[in-house]
Structure formats: structure tokens, C-alpha cells
Image (cartoon, rainbow, N blue to C red; front, side):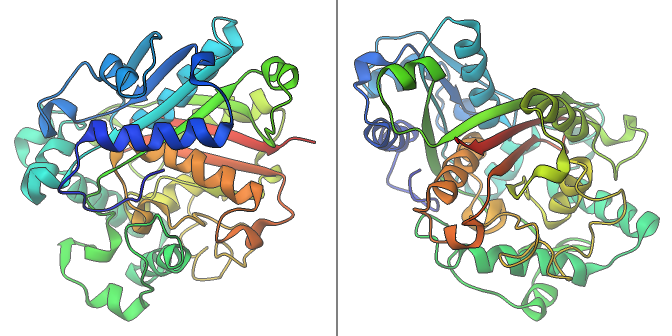
Length: 378
């Protein structure tokens, strides 16, 4: 990963080159061994007037390989990882560089909000003034009305994730906050305030995926394996869904990933989920089958999902505090979880005995979701 935050003087290609070079160096392989590149990016055309990023980013890293850009809104990075996995499993590649990048601050708040909104339904939502803060506010209000809970429960999610990010050198925000500060913050869309929302972020992340055979043949130190992958889809517009407090895309992606890895939800030791808003973390935990529907709202308040809880969630700080450069977020989850497993993350002590982790990356109001299971190689 690069540092996440405001990078006014850097371009997307510059950020991705840094992340890609770091990944290659960390993997300890020759770049000539790389067979393909998959890149997650959502808003390149809007933020930098730059599409066709696959070959651009390949050449930034000195790679002459098939290069493909993957777009699935805020799930673009996770989907790039999934495509890399498919390429390796299909036998068309042994070594794949997967990555993601987004530059957003140069668009300003209004521009970035408008750019992100194109991940919603233009006919039924965007043209009527709905942006994602408003959409997730609707989901939160319906959740409170259906299942209970309140703003303080959501504030506990923000406090937890800021605490996790406070010592993460790559996080955008490295300051702890209080429940009172969250509740007193500037309102964004009732019941969500400023600290319920992930920030506008610039950044990039990348990883090297290799086949099991390649790792063995080259005696690579590869202590973490992606053992399961899954993807789900839902209606784009909230109004077309049977429920706006249940995320079938997450549930379907999780079911596929669990079956692929040969595990179930009870086997998961810790996870990184898509908390673009505090309510999104609650919905993710339920969609992933870790809590029954309507039961995750007070998980942070009870200490169950804190760093010292029984199921640590977003030890990186999550999108909420680590930052959310949308095309890079799914890769950042993979990067942070790998370091947590390896013991070279600031919060690794919280999961020193962990064997199974999960990443959850979502697009829009979870019209798209991708889930990966990561395990320590025995």
C-alpha cells in the first residue's frame, strides 16, 4: 500500500507505480515472472480524464503482459483480486499482479460526491438527488425502525475503527475519537454525521498472487493463502429491493467463498469489511452470517468487534479511518490482512493466534460484493 490520504501533488499512475513496486519487492520475485495484471479503478475518466488504465499501469511497472482494468464501483479492487485468482486457477497464469488505485481529492468534495454517485441508479436515484450518504442514511433509518439501535451504536463503530487506525502509519486518520465527538459532529444525512462516513481518499495498493505450484517450485516464503473467493449481485436501486437492511450480494458472496474454502462463518477469526459508512459495517456482519439479522448493531458497543474482542473487525482502521480510495480499497484489505497474519502490522498482536481471516468489499449500496477467505499456510 501507499500511504492513504490527500495526495494533491501525485497522479494515479504515480501512486500505483509505488504500490506495485513495493508488492514486487515484498514478494521477492523478478518482474519478468509476472504473467498478467488486473487493475481495479472506478473513476479514472472522471477524476483524471484517464481511461484505458490497464496498459498504462503495466508500463509504469515495466511489464509487457496482458493488462485488464476491472470496474465494479467501490468493489473494483476486490474484483481485480478475484480475476487474478481465476486466471491462476484456470492455468493461464502462475504469477499475477493485482492492484487498485484512485485519485479523488483533486475533484473536490462536490466533484467526488458526484463521481461516486454514478455507482447508483441514474434513472431512479441520481436524477432525484440521492447520493450515497443519503442512501446509507435511508438504510440506517430503516434498520433502526425494523431492528432497533440508535446513533450511539453507530458511533461506537467509528470510535473502534479510529482506535485501530491510530497507530497505522498508512492510515489517513491516525487520531482516536470519542462517542461524544461522533454524536456532536456536523450532520451529513440524518442519522449519519461526519464521523459516520469514510473520507475522500487518494491511494493505491497491490499484491502478487502466485499458484501453489509456483510457490513450491521457487521456494517462496508465502505464509498466507487465499483459499476462498465469492461474488454476489443485487438490484442497483434501493427501491427495487425486497429489503434495504439485508444485503443479498454479501450473503451470496460469503456463501460461495465459504464453500470454496471449505469453512463456515464460525471458523473466521477476524475480518476486514466494507465500512464506507458505520451502518455498512453492521449490515456486512449480518450478511456474512456472523450475526443474525438485526443483531450486529451493538457488537462494537459490547466490545465484541474491538481489537481485544472475540471477533476483531477492521484492525486496519477500515475504510472509515484507514481511508477509501475506492478502486484500491479491496486490495488494501488484502494487504493489511496479509501483514496482520505475518506479524508485521502494528495490530498483529490482536490476532497472533488467528488462522482464518475474511475480506469483504462492496460496491454502491452493496449491489456488488466480493468476499475472500485468507488462511495461514500450515
